[in-house]
Length: 326
Ligand code: TXA
Ligand code: MG
Image (cartoon, rainbow, N blue to C red):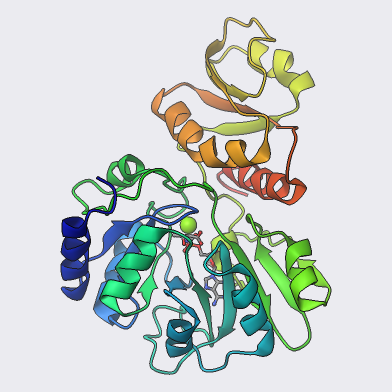
């Protein structure tokens, strides 16, 4: 049973022991460790193979707990947490001095978020401490949206089961400064919703970074959320040409079957609406990856529903299909 009490106690016991575990959120599964346990936080970096310059998100069960991890909680943060928490919005504010420097990658800011998932909230409340939680995948790889995905990334890891993730792509990351409000990563909370709450214009940063370069948000590397199989993003009109090339492809498309090419080894049918597309995207990419074809071809989706969510999906598809060596 997802979130069973015995499982929860076991999860808390392991965390108190300094052992990272997998835990569910409404977006993707996280690799959790107590944020104030520097040794456990270092283990998280090691397990993920994550560059030390890429800061972690700190998960809290409410605003009061967020205040333990920060040194300033500006009115804008107060308003955003009031409007969107628990929910898929991560807010960057000045960090508490007591937070281990590893968490923020040595930086002066910390990213906090309160997940809208009953099992995650129960876990953090039972631990009674903030929890770091990068997505529970090896650095650069596709984020996990089921317990099986997490176990495939980290065999033997204890995973608290919360079922499949409802949203399926990572939270919106927003930085609130005195001068400007910036969305650093698109997600289910739209820039327009943030503008509505703050009554201020919001910038959406098109961060594209070369690995190794210094950046303000190193998780936004150009190639990210990527399968191991070379992946291309194409327009539906290009499908005959692309699949006509002499390689075997698995094609992710909303309307499969349009092209009868011998090089198409498999089709994965994708939903038409944004919510269902986001919720199934990473599972589809992982299934495609496991087929071990020469290439994954994703047909650029067009569909109904939330335009901002489509923009977040487009962002992930672009990163999944970015060349290995930009
Ligand atoms: O939905 C999510 O946010 C998931 C679930 C597990 O909560 N977590 C997640 O964490 O996606 P992660 O570590 O995979 O992505 C965190 C992103 C990275 O792009 C990182 O660079 C950025 O947030 N980030 C974290 N702290 C930051 C900071 N202080 N300043 C700028 N960017 C920051
Ligand atoms: Mg990640």
